[in-house]
Image 1: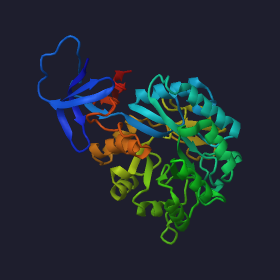
Image 2: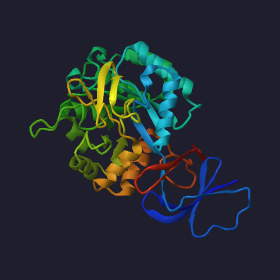
Image 3: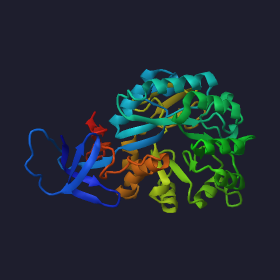
Image 4: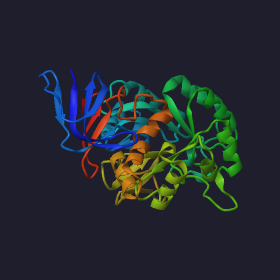
Amino acid sequence: MYHILHNVQVVLHNKIVSSANVWISEGKIMRIDTGDLPILGEEHERIDGRGHLLVPGMIDVHIHGANGFDMMDGTEESIQEVSRACASSGCTSFLATSVSSTMEDLLEMIRSVKRAIGQEAGAKIAGIHLEGPYLNPKRKGMQNEKYLRHPNLEEMKMIFQEAGSLIKMVTIAPELPGGMDLISFLKEKGVVIAIAHSDATYEEAKQAFTAGASHVTHCFNGMRPIHHRDPGLIVAAFEEKHVSLQAIVDNVHLHPAIIRLMHTLKGPEGMVLITDALQAMGMGDGNYIFGGHPVTVADGIARLEDGTLASSTVTMNEALRYTVEIGISLIDAVQMASTTPANILGFQQKGEISTGFDADLVLLDDEFQVLWTMVGGQIL
């Protein structure tokens, strides 16, 4: 049996096809063609896209919560609610992302992910992103300083003992004592090593990138800023071809000119759109507790009591729209939301609308609102 999506604009890796048919069977894309459909038997299901935009399912490598649920709650319910929220916003896979906490709370979060994986209500769990606790207090941002500590290999081994191969990405401050040893350990584990909440100098960042770090978490936020006599880790990342950058495109965290600069220097293959969303995503303005801090969301912007930005409330479909609105092509924006994160995580059959790839797809209207999300060939 085939599901045939017809009358859709399809964003392929290098072009947009204005009217295409996408044939799906057993959770895979089997064929992409144009023109009229042949006469089909009743065993095949036709789905009319009504001329709307079909993009590959987006992949969020950095999300903390949604719909009032924080994944650090340590409950399967929280993980499932984020899974549902991701799917409703066009995200078909995500990394469950921690914040700095006690070891007990982190291990409970990992256990809750393990209980939910394989039973997801919406988007699939692609793994875990550890954001901390090995971060620099000087650039802590919203991270709770009382939980920040120097890299500890024995502690990290304990984390891996619980999580195993679920750990896909770890964000650290490499300049801290033990940082380079931790990079060596994580490189052996095949983990994406990211830098943020870091005061690393240009030279320290270069050393980390040479040793195995390859990613920058929420670039420009939570790190030493660029200065013409002290370029810092951002310029070091710009110079290293193998280093990719996360961007929170929410009209708050980054000026449009900075996003365009990142795109110019790195290209879509070196940039990843993320939400970095807290539990306020999908909830609106109000008061929340995140990372042990009181957080107030006003006009969609989350801040601590001292005014520090505390993650975001943006969704992936909104981030995609904002990226296009500031002048980046739709093809490049889709690559940054889908293809590049898939490539970074080593997912060879996700992130593109292409024959043989997973049928993780999203249908969007002209305003980038999600009409439906398909995961593994099933519309949710």
